[in-house]
Amino acid sequence: MECRAGCAACCIAPSISSAIPGMPLGKPAGVPCVQLDERLGCRLFGLPERPAVCGGFRPMMDVCGTHRSEAIWLLGEWERQTS
Image 1: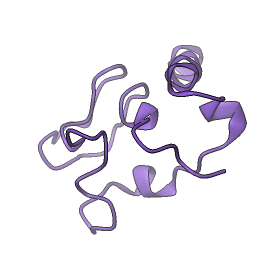
Image 2 (image 1 turned 135 degrees about the vertical axis):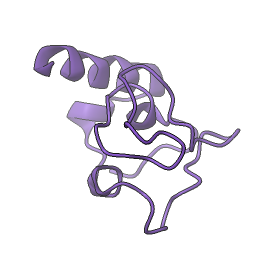
Image 3 (image 1 turned 180 degrees about the horizontal axis):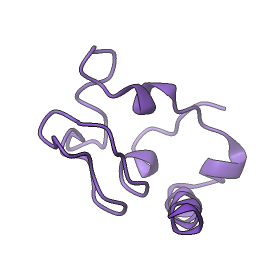
């Protein structure tokens, strides 16, 4: 599965405990990453500053669903169940 352009659910719904440039303490669940641009793309994509957890994320149907709102719900649900 390929990432959907303009989705960014993985950059919004889950918490990220790793430091992110501009978010040194990571980011809480439900808060958009400060590195998202106006087209919901990652400003750090391909750069060494990008957190390993972000680079290691792989889109899958059971996580991303069939559309952006489903992905946000699914990732948010995983976050709630594991917090």
